[in-house]
Length: 393
Image (cartoon, rainbow, N blue to C red):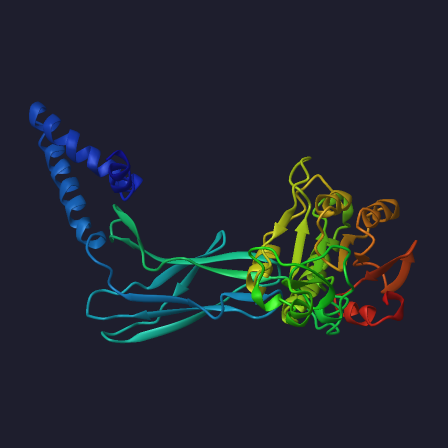
């Protein structure tokens, strides 16, 4: 109730409240004192306030649509919002409509519209930076000629433009080591895979399709196959979100590298895990949803260098269950070699680490840190060339 009264009171301007005060107080005081002029002034103030009401009450006088050219775009790709305004009848149409984009309000002037006319205006959106841009709502400010009342009418809902990190084309085999059918056999045994290991006695619950009928007929008892699980060619991407690991322009480049590697794996229908810096010392893995390309890129869009823990803690959080054959360790130019060696050393022996170092001020290069390949990338376009290097093999 109080909030409703507050919203209604907000439509009265400072000048309007002055007139309301004169009308409410001046009339009784003028009558009590016999002051005719004050009574006339109070009556005139009341008439002005009443005359202002029709200008701000009632339904909207135009039909408005606000649409985005796309919901998601990479950094630098053009995007725009289209504002379509239609005047359905002969009611007075506004001269301008305000559109909120982020924290900035843009005023779009409208041409003169007759009944049934339609106008389309295009608003170019800034996609130079990664992030989420809220576009809308479109509003119109209705006021009276006397400046007594003013009311903002909301004409559309708000929409959101997600500006993703850029991605580049990379070699088809870059996102993982080997395909599942060519994977190395692991030490444990499983009931279902492609690498046959041995036979064992049948246990209740075993699938009939795994029964080895020839051996069963020869021995007189049910025998089933057991397998060696092949190591999957799943991809793990570890990215630090600690400011200590990045120079001034490194983090955006690092996210572009992560996006390129991870979307490449998704395109090859590999399973991919993307893990950022843990939020606390508990070292629970901070995974980004990578089930689809859009979810992955949406998650990367929201990342910032706001975590205290660095790349060593990222790898430590998943070292016990990396579930991958290759681990990409993505850092910036200020990550110390000692910390990179420590991070790579936390991974199991059957996981191949590769360090991707984003350094916006450095030329591309491929080297090694002990036995770990290190690819330094100065531009996103250098990534594909570096991944083709024999030094990463």
